[in-house]
Length: 145
Image (cartoon, rainbow, N blue to C red; front, side, top):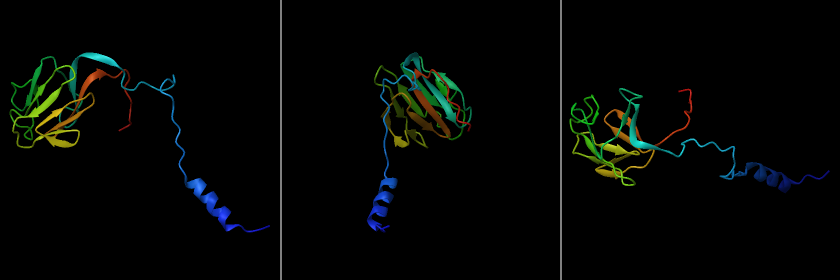
């Protein structure tokens, strides 16, 4: 029996490689996690912070967000300015604009003065982290968290 050190290195290299498999998008077993069902109106759901689980239906073209109860989206917390941000909702052109707040408005992890929103965009205002949705999920995924 011969000892071949090169063969050992080749076997090691082969076992360290990564193989990528792709499922065809037409595969019936691929779940539609987001669902393509359009909502009548966009929604803003609080996923972190006070009032987690609250969902606001955004049924006007202009939505105000802030600590003042007169706002469309009332966020009662000292980390939120009285008139913190404004959303402009138009098909395919949804935006959020900071109104000179003290703590800023964050979209998808970046502080912004004004930003375009997409389905699933994360908006953080003060201690509130919210998700903007224009489609409705057909099923809820339990994470165990």
